[in-house]
Length: 246
Image 1 (cartoon, rainbow, N blue to C red):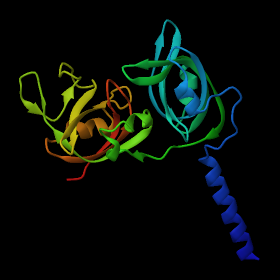
Image 2: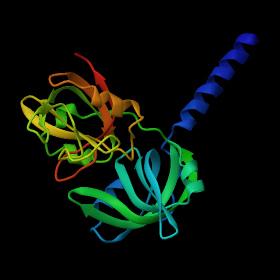
Image 3: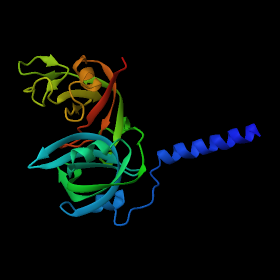
Image 4: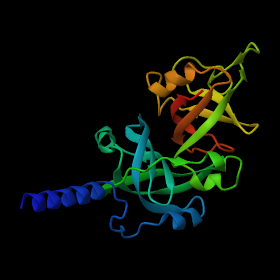
């Protein structure tokens, strides 16, 4: 009898855990699939349902709270910019929270996003697994994973030039004109091709582990990274984790 009860309990626990991380929640009426969303022209109103994966920032502008959010579903990634959001609502947007967003589709320097939207929290939860896109660097396939949580493995830290022409592992701001607390820019390479990655200070501030890790990098270090596949005139990931492997 005890064995039967243990088996039943184990099955119930398994179903509960699966349900807590399921993106197969019922379709919300009026919401586009990721494929439908990507086919829509820029500057048109769209409605999507996705799951919060990271909160980049919250601010207040002319009495209106606004936020920037990375979200994802089983098919693709989303970036919500200028999302109308009170501070109290922002606190509720924990990782995995399912939201319905209506806003304007926009494309800015290659980055596809939804601007000036409104949202509501709906039932469901999903936390995306990190997708390794190292092999897709330099290919046309990479942009199809824009805004997803991704990883890059075995890349080499390359030198950047500071204002004095000295080789350094990173810069504050893209041109080195910044200071502690600003975005960090650093170059990495794979198979002889160089890429610029960023620690976006609104997403990961100066007290975050990744900010400190990048400041400690040395030219020539081999590193693994995780972050969100942001796009700015080409691949420009917002890195959230850096590990030196060699």
